[in-house]
Each structure stands twice: as C-alpha cells, then as structure tokens.
Amino acid sequence: MKNYNTGVLYSKPSECLNGYTSIAPIRHEEAYLVDMSGEVAHSWNLGGLLGAKAYLIPNGNLLCCLYTNEGAPIKAAKGGRILEIDWDGNVVWEHVDHNQHHDVTRLENGNTLYIAWEELSQQEAIRVRGGVLGTEREEKIYGDVIREVNPDGEIVWEWFFKNEGYDEYALSEDCDRAEWAHANAVSTTLDGDILVSFRHLDTILVVDRETKKVKWKHQDKSWGHQHNCQMLPNGNITFLANGMNNLVQPLHSRAVEFDTKKREVVWQFKDPRQWTFFTPIMGSVQRLENGNTVICEAVNGRVFEVNTNDEIVWDYVAPMYHYNEIFDSDSNAMFRAYRYTPGSPEIRSRL
Image (cartoon, rainbow, N blue to C red; front, side):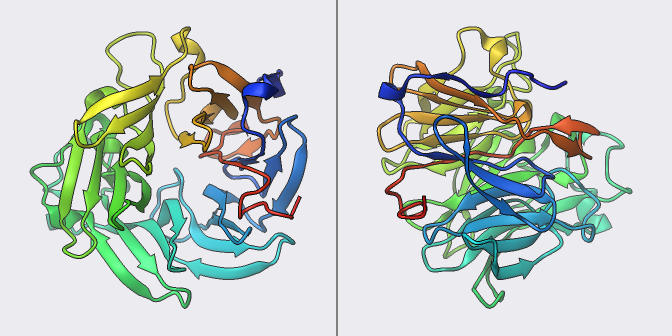
C-alpha cells in the first residue's frame, strides 16, 4: 500500500544538520540526493536495477551494487555487479561477483570490501543447525564470505564464515535455511579489523584482519535481526534493531548505540507510539557530526532525523514508488539512507 503522504512531512530547521540525503530505492534504476525540503538535488541513472546499497564515497562518486540474474538463487538484497559512477553518470570502476549481496564498502586504501555467498557442500550443509526445516533453496544452503578486492579486481583478503565452525552459530528458529547466516553489513573497526552483522544469528562480530579469527562477538535475540552495524569514533557500535522477534508487543524497531566494552545499550531511539516506527527488514542508523541521528525505516521508504533529545526534527517519505519484484508490488523501500553536509568531501562544490 502506498503512503500518500510523501516528501518532507515535518522539519525543524534550527535542530537539523543541513545537507543532502541519499535516497536509493531497491530494484530501481535511479538513485537520488534530496535536499532538506525534499526536492531532488541530483540523481544518477544506474543502468540497471539496484541490488541493495548505494552511497557516496569521499571522491563524490556513487558506489552501488546492481542486481544480476547469475549466481546464487536468492533475490533478497542480491547484487552481483559493483559499480562506481561519477557525478555525470559515467561508470569509472566495475567489479562483477554474481554472488555479491547486501553490503559494499570502499576502504581508505582504495580497495573494496563486500559480502558474497558460497554454496556449501552437502557435507557442510548438514552441519548447519537451526532455522525452519525444509526452507533450503533448491535443497542447498549458501554460506557467507567477506571479500576485499583491489582496484584491479584481484581478491587480496577473504574470510569464510564456515571456518568458524558450526556448533556455536545456530540459525534463529524463525529464519529459513537457505542462508547461513545472512550477513547484511560489513565495515571496518577503528583498528582496521572487520565488523560484520549476521541477521539470522542476531549476532554482531569482529574478525581480526591478520589472524582471520573472531576477536569479539555479541548476540542478543531482542535485537530482532539487526542491520547496519557501524563503529563510532568512541568505539561504540550503532545499528538498527529491527525487532522481528520482540516479546514486547507491538512489534517495533529501535536505533541503538551499543558499548562494546560494557556490552550494554547506552542510547536507543524507539517511537513513543512504538507501532509507528517498524521495519522488519533492512534499515540504517547514521550518527551525524552534530550528535543527531539519521534513521532509515526501510520498508516504508521513510528517513527521519532525531536530535540529542530524541525529538524528531526532520521526517521524510520517498515518493519514488516503482514496481519491486521482491514485494510484487509498487514500493519505495530502500536498504539504507545517508546524510551529507554541503562541505563534506562527498558534496563539496558539486551542488
């Protein structure tokens, strides 16, 4: 069902961080930057259907992943073709891995980090515990791999989740068995290690880049299949707790800041009317330089900003509806959203 109230629903300019917000509906052929009034300030024609993520990198180019038909037979957040597109719409870099899915990140060294699937052997698949019986994809299970490629497309670092063993990582009881274990976010820590979110495990972990061993992990079923873990300069982690398996009704999502040392929530936002902020899948949390937080309520195509007093100061619903084969309906759903200030490297002098 369409939300007929679109564009900027509410704004308190004195409390907002001025800038441009990325709007990239999944399975859409265009990505956008909208200004604080909700007007499109810039757009890119992607030349294909967006798989999941699209965001600006410091040189001002758009890094995104487009959907391909090849690879694993899983459609949710599947990409396969990673593109860097300049401000004028020209493809300046491309890497094809038909098993790429969900997240892609440009590193400071110029390499690109992303998530991919690999088909588990029959012997490996039978060791995967948990999940809903009979929900394998064509009787197969696909495991997660994290890959780093250089500008020439050469794999320079690779980590296979299956090497961590099977006994400790059972799938949540409400998740299908096609994926073990549905990694949906990858980025780097302050030390250059690898931070990964596994939705079907309700788990966030850190992989030591040198040893390729897990050096920190935390699981919490109350997160309800989280998304978009990112490390802050203080070492805490922000993420979206989707709330799919909340015991406290109604179902609701939360934006969370988690202290990795004390292993406790030090900040969270959930709407006082809890049912008005809920996305069962996807979504993002971005802490801004003024302390505000931008939150993407993904399935509703909604992006809103809250200040340090947890007051909503900007509220926007994308009007970019289009047919989405995943939902088999018109949709404005997006994987994530990001805010860029006019003076940021991503925007500077371009708008």
